[in-house]
Length: 193
Length: 209
Image 1 (tube, helix red, strand yellow):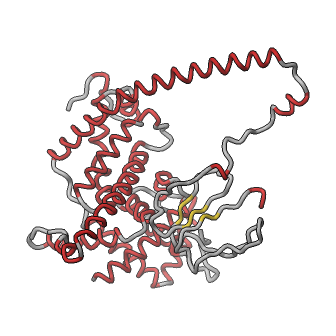
Image 2 (image 1 turned 30 degrees about the horizontal axis):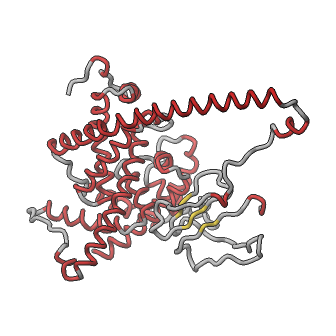
């Protein structure tokens, strides 16, 4: 969509200022700029497309609603990723509880039947899908704080300092969480292999 | 956090991980540390093994990048977001207008009341002393934490009362108990399980320090 005269801006600061003023086109441009990284982070934290899109939607609504309170102490990207990752973890908890309840009601046999269906994709793509499932399964077994830290670093390519900023923790804690997350992933993936 | 190097001069695994993650690249202030790590890595093959593992995990991560949603899905999502924003905004404006009006009214009443009090009372030494008094907004016993994000995982909450800053949620392995002191109020030794596997609030009152 072409931006109107009042909203024709290229850098984030001007775009943010326009979005705060209520310029719809600026808000849409912010969405277009950051939707991919937001989606990838949400997907890694939740493990499926539908939930990830829900989390992205919720996060953008929250972020754009509260945009006037964004003080610009960090970049918009890191601020948004904080909202996205928190929304994803909250959604994961809600869905997890709901699924656990419905699975308990169904019984163990139905639980096996509910295993995700993977459509047969030829050759390398199938292998990649398998790999993705293994990695997602291992990721879901990490404690939420470690998972969030690891995903922000590995998927959003944030530096240690940026991750610390997003999560409001020290760089030492980031280092420690990343180390333990990798150790656990290594053990879990080796067990699967 | 542990110290960067162990007693034998070996770097901590966290430090090595930071090096593998490229955290020292382009950092002149860390060039000595980087050289020391590179020297250590040249002499210790196990470091190379760790590096190979990191690279495998990074490659695996890269190979499993999630598929992008289609253009139609993005468009649908944007429409939903726009619709939500339209629903959210008018009540918010009304709320803030009402809140601003209420706040202004309260301020007026407060200013009028203060003015009347000031006129009716002569200043005394006690008044001057009380100017420096700090009135607490809430004491630690008046604050109840209902929920802490991540409380469903085995965690330890580290913080200090009265609340001075954010409480930090630590995962197992983030905290090492080097010594545990009895509680100053009743001399009871806190119960701590073998590892930081169960939630525990560790908070000491400032007066006990």
